[in-house]
Image (cartoon, rainbow, N blue to C red):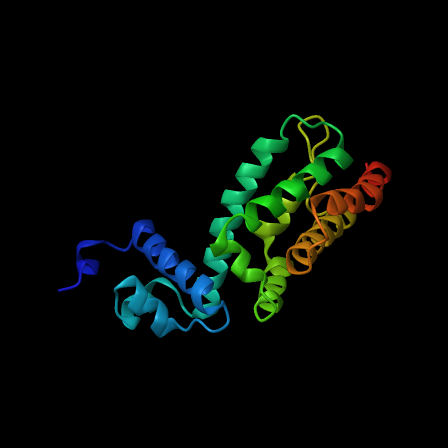
Length: 192
């Protein structure tokens, strides 16, 4: 008998499914991982899996949001003392890149076969947009109201830069830092 019956519908069960999916995304690729694969790896039936997630895209989105929140919290803690929006954005992007690159389960999303799906999620996710805003917002200079179209576009553009550098990295972190300091920091100084 499956131990899934011992778990009520809960966050714990959904987390278990996402953990199983994460391993498969890393091993097989994001686009190659099917719902049947996830159910088998999680030790549940497909019917149980579908009780928690409507489809494969829902699993992908839930996983990306969970990990984006985790990485975002880590990055925010790392850059929290930086007041200048340009410096903060540069440090935040570099910290984000390091966090994703150091985790095999996350960097798998940026392989050539999977980067398109990753960009699609990144560009349509309000969660990721909010996290991107935090890269240039500070306690003394918070990001303007989310309805402000320029700031929304800036957050989306910053997300594209991060996805781009994860998909097609610079030669090294020094080159990436230089590009960010030359092109992103001045933009934020003007926008602020």
